[in-house]
Length: 132
Image (cartoon, rainbow, N blue to C red; front, side):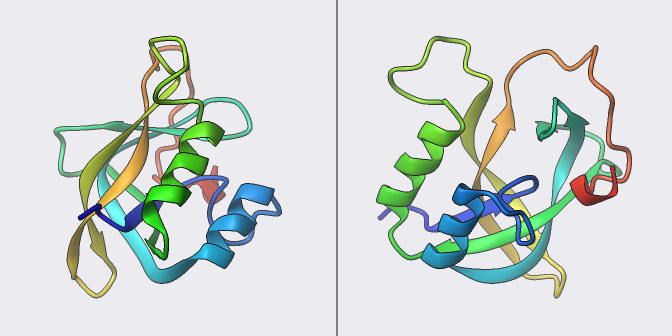
């Protein structure tokens, strides 16, 4: 069975007037604000999440339960330009990672990790894209 959770931390979150954010809102159940261990960078007008070994590095986003995970993840893979048919290395890769909801509940969720070098990118120290 395919994992049906998706963690988003950028332009797919609630409050963004983007067609893909609207698709997520229509096609998934919002579980709540969630956190993962990682670092957030400002790529352009959108962020990139990079995993970190430092427990103090936290990225805040939103967790969703996808109603049709296979179909929706295919759509989001196309939006993030990752997976089959895209030149390697892709800007993002979809990967499972542990996340924790504000109530402390732990979950595993898909997310899109930034896959290109970040040395030249500004870090979003708060871990919150909306607070950049």
